[in-house]
Length: 54
Image (cartoon, rainbow, N blue to C red; front, side):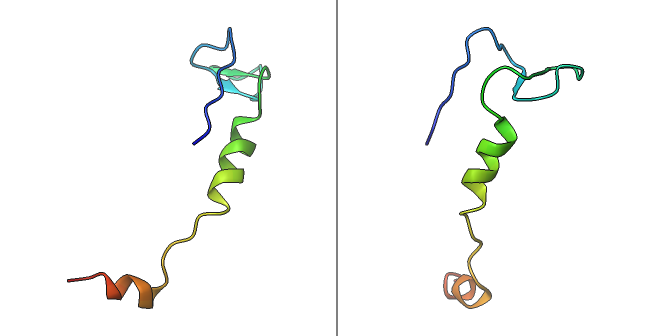
């Protein structure tokens, strides 16, 4: 788990486009941070999933 707090950002999307509502270019690129996490996550294979069905 990783938490990033950017002071003054409020509830805006960090690393976004300043011309879009609730987006600020300030801070880390939130989309890139999320992708870095999710690209390493995998769904179980069909065989593996069936083994857990009762």
